[in-house]
Image (cartoon, each protein chain N blue to C red):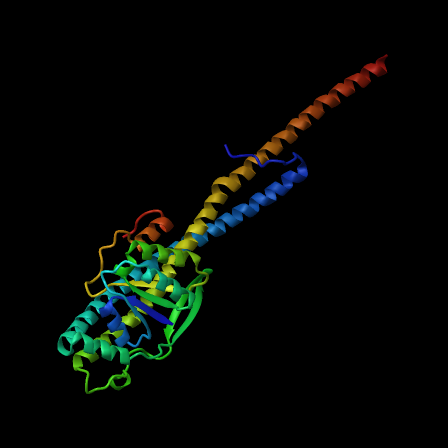
Amino acid sequence: MPEIIEGISPTRMELLRLSRREKLAEKGHDLLREKRDALIGEFLDVVGEVRDARKAVDSKLKEAFDFLILAQAKSGVEQVRQLSLMSPQEIRLDFTSRSIMGVHVPTLELKDGLARKVTERGYGLIDSSAAVDRSAKSFEEALERILKLAELEEAVRNLAGEVEKTKRRVNALEYIMIPSLKTTRKYIRMRLEEMERENFGRLKKIKAMLERKERE
Amino acid sequence: MIAVIGDPETAAGFRLAGVKEVHEYPYPPDGGEDVARMLDKLAKDGFAIIIITERFAAEARNRDKIREINAEKKGVMPIIVEVPDKKGPMEKEIDEIGRLIKRAVGVAVK
């Protein structure tokens, strides 16, 4: 049995206020339930995308590492390291967030595409080999996919949090708030009816007394 | 904006791809709190994306640190992404996405 809200006086005013609150709570409950269902749908969609993105990253990175190991075998580990130290550039990211039903979801955008031309990589052509170029290229591609994955994973995390929060609210309304409003309303109605009956009895008694007085 | 933490091979690869902030640590790790401390520093410095290899992220101390950063962050930055290293993807003891699904939907969806 749900709790009756404490400290409420059984009056007609209170009864009216309670039924208004109950109506509001029910409306809110319906809205939140819809929000929850929509969020879960969105969440599952993004989960599917994350799985695909994860697979894409895994396979691309594997390829990239294969090329890297090949390059290391051809030019020597130290040489590849030296070359790699020469190639850093500024990777510029556009970091914005859009919102899916009130949930902030990041979107990452590369200002200028990652894949560069051989001459833009920063290391000399003479002391590098084709294998180094290939591994650089596939790492660039892998990086692009990793950014996509980062975006999606973050979206999933935020959506999951929001789903949980909405679910908690729906349940709180459904199992605690609305039932307790209902029982309180019932309690007040019964108290009022009881008071009315008492009053009725009292009136009858008074009437009888008055009639007796008149007869005397 | 992008930072990488990884073993020497991963570091070399991402440097070739043009990432500036690459921190390489020997693997297997030689103890020390270096990676966790670096994660902290990168998060404070406002990097948008921190790429870390799964093997490093799986270390208990780093795992705790990642969780801490994720719990503390406001807004969407930084995003920590775990990527496989040259040995390929790790068998994960906890599937993070699966756990999220279970918490959000109530049942595990494959």
